[in-house]
Length: 181
Image 1 (cartoon, one colour):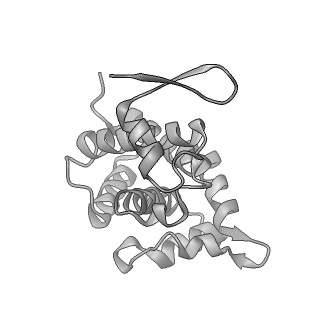
Image 2: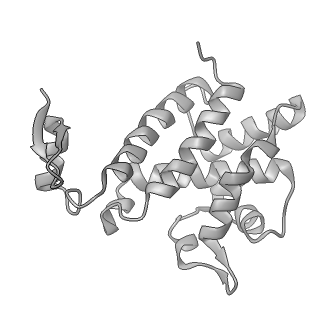
C-alpha cells in the first residue's frame, strides 16, 4: 500500500512500504536522490528482462562473451550504437593519469576479461566486438556489485549515471536481440 510523505519541498511524494522501510533502515538510502533510486530500480528490472530474453536465464561472463561472439558472426553487433555509453565509461574509469580509482572497484575477475576491458577503456583496443564485450562486462560487474552488496559500502552514492548508462546499454541490446512484444 503506498504511503505519502513530504519530500521537503512541500510536494507530496508517494512511497511504497519498501521505500519507507529502506529509508529508515538501509544506511544512506534516505539521502539517495530520487533519480538515483529510479536508475537503480530500472536497472534491476532491465537486467532481469535482459537475462531472461537475451541470456536464456543464465547470465555468466563466458555466456555473455559467447553471445557477443555470435552477434559478431551474425553481423548484428551494431557496436556503433553504443558510443555515448562507451564514452561515459571511458571517462569514468580512465583519465589523464591512467585508470581512475573507480576502475578497480568494478572488481573485475579473471573470467570477466579484465585485460580486454582495460584495453578498451584506455582506448588501446577499439575493436567493435571488444567494445561491446567490455560494455557488457562493466554492466555485468555493476549488476554483481549491486546484487551482492558491494555498492552498499558507499551507500549507493554516485551511481545514477552508471546505472543510467547501463540501462541504455541493456535497452538497446534488448531491442536488438530480445524477444520483445
